[in-house]
Image (tube, rainbow, N blue to C red; front, side, top):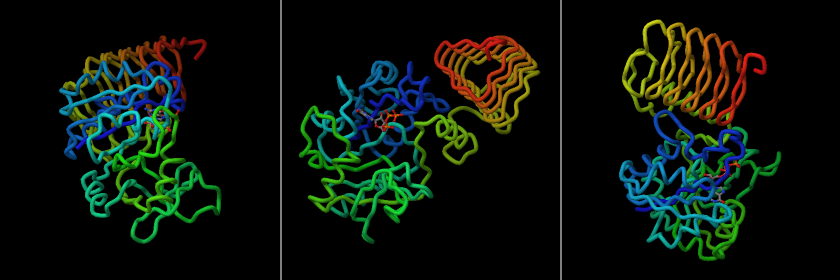
Length: 348
Ligand code: GTP
């Protein structure tokens, strides 16, 4: 089976991190975020994935290539201008041979894709939408169904009293290619706002499958951090790497150097250097080649590759993008820093 993964958005809510790295390539414990989606699709029997790219596509293609390292065949389709979620799928359709999975490239979920596809075929659906109940659906697209799961109405970001439904569009679909027949090629079209409402009205063959599986949209700083926490806590699948001591995960499998204090849970990537006296954790993730100097304290923070933290510095509740430098004795608290930013003791 084939899948189309939408990876073309600008990821504005994760700026400044996404100025240099497209959201699907944001690291998540051992692999770029879309590596988790690709792996889940592969395990569900998908052998061909079409990545629908627009913003910073070269970073994605340079990393994944033809997909041989991740066990699937990867194809790339490109948009000059963003075509929106349905326009992007339409743009990929020339590579599609039959029923497809479609995944938003920013959703981490444990939904059973095989179950979703079987439900789709059993109901002879034109589109099947994975949905999930949330307490407050006001920021999401709400999906109203009848008792058979047939979708009756889509309500985008409902106001109070507009709907009693709590199931939101969870961003994973099974689609028949003909679901996109009515869409003009090369035009910006939203699947949530335009395509699904039209299909509901015209075909009555749009269904939803609501599950209580783990689900998070990693597209905001708070949820990106939460996804790390959920994996470190074991709420979602565990990260790649070895647990070298209770709650201390190491990509290389090596124990932390003597004199380093770790408050679990922590994750340490390949070739990270930790000087004696450094204190890391809890909920601290250090990606490849970060250098943490003596007596530095890092807590509740995610440091992307090649960051440097000087001696005696403190980094708390922060996300540091690639190659950020925190000079000695500086303090970073509650910040999101973009690539190459530099924090000195005085301007921190
Ligand atoms: P924000 O700017 O922070 O809202 O993020 P985003 O640009 O990723 O938008 P959003 O979260 O709404 O997108 C949902 C999914 O669709 C993400 O996986 C995006 O990469 C993808 N996406 C959104 N718009 C487009 C588009 O025009 N083309 C393609 N190929 N993908 C898109």
